[in-house]
Image (tube, rainbow, N blue to C red; front, side, top):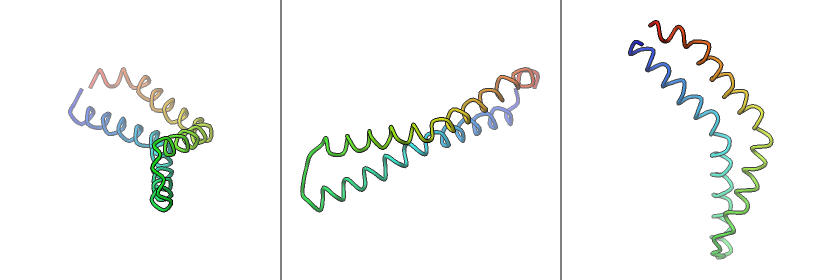
Length: 90
């Protein structure tokens, strides 16, 4: 394996990880920000108030984006397994 191949594989792994995790992290960030603003306006300091909406939104995002996330992970894994013979020879 050459250094370029290792770098490319690492970059592809990081890119795939970022693509798959972005919908979940982004939605949790937005909901957390909205709940924090709501808490600041109403001066309600309840720790569970941020937890429940985040869990609901993350569950909805998993239901909606789950098939796409599985397709991305499956395509990446298939590409890795198909290229094993090429990777070992280089």
